[in-house]
Image 1 (cartoon, helix red, strand yellow):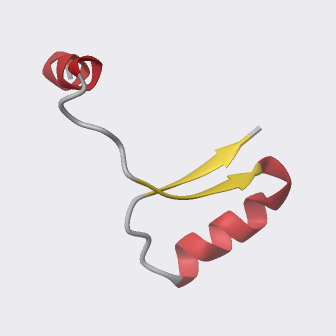
Image 2: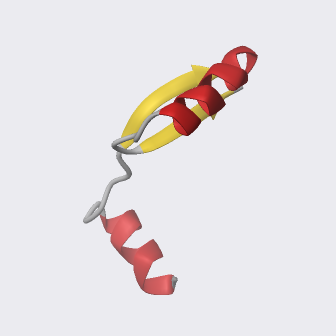
Image 3: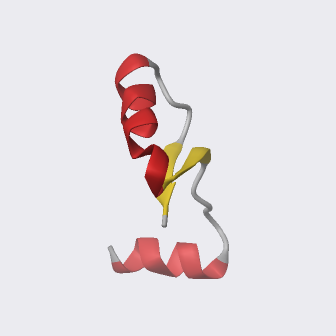
Length: 46
């Protein structure tokens, strides 16, 4: 895990975000996860 954190801090890896949903649309985000195959992370923002 420490190596992963070093790579992340050095900018050698970056997370891939498929979609971002506001908290008020969390049910849509879950539906998207269940129905499809996201190509990255699905993020729920405050």
